[in-house]
Length: 371
Image (cartoon, rainbow, N blue to C red; front, side):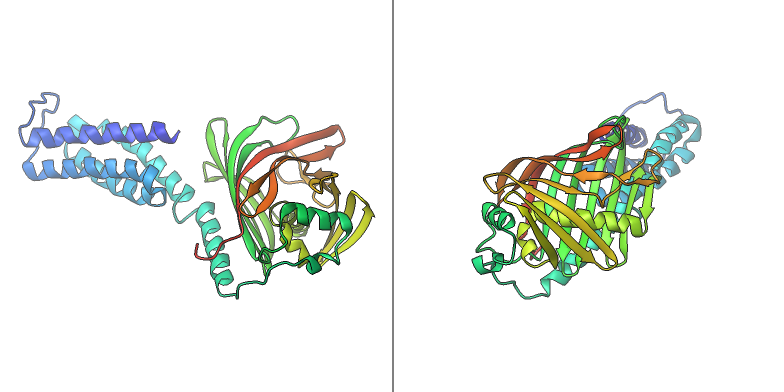
């Protein structure tokens, strides 16, 4: 869609150069019957160049596209009005441009969820940069943990690395809202911080050819999930204690998958089940959550299961108690660690288990200082 809109604006920009060409007698252009003065011809040229700048900004500086597009829209419509009889149909092109500008202001500019995500992340990074560099994790730090958890942390390679204060992850895959819903391709980025625990997750998907953006935010004031079609139309808006409890499970899951070294420091109560399973209980404020971690013979975490993260019903408002799990299919080396790279998230619905997200992780970094 972005390419189609960019092409539309580019063609509209090139048409403005015709007004400049007529004003300076560079072409006959009998289609333009009204005379255009040279000063107004320069304005036509400015309109075209500004619109082309907006097209470039859409790809090179999307945060500022809306502002460049708005400037081009104003100048363009001004010259169209000045030659209304010849150029009035350009208003149709500007109507499309106006919609693109509005979308851009909310999708990439200062009025939408993406900008809120960026501000939350920058606040977390700034706060983290003021803290002293953490000490490294030693074998002795692992000794209080159940044996299968210790094997997993050694499998992941956390011994000898600095204690985790936060991480960034980037991933892609496909997602759906229910077992019978259509899959949507997505890309996502998230930042987690651990003093105090915070989680900011940004997702971009495509639904019926239209862009969908979503922000999951977990902080000291609780958790929320907001999903918007075209960055404007609310699809899902959730918050409250039930949502926060469920996202506390997600925060624990993130630690296990993407930052296993933080398990040394989180105030988790562990219970060893057997050689391949351990139960984690975490009290975060008023929210107490539990999860069962399942490991294979190599020490890798192969599943994470919890009954404390409900599923979202198809109405986009109701949360349904169901077992949540994140089986892992593949590990890869990311920086100094061996981490989960391919997996899915599943719900055990009454009609049968189903995956609602399948993803591949492209990057995990715990080196966030200087970003």
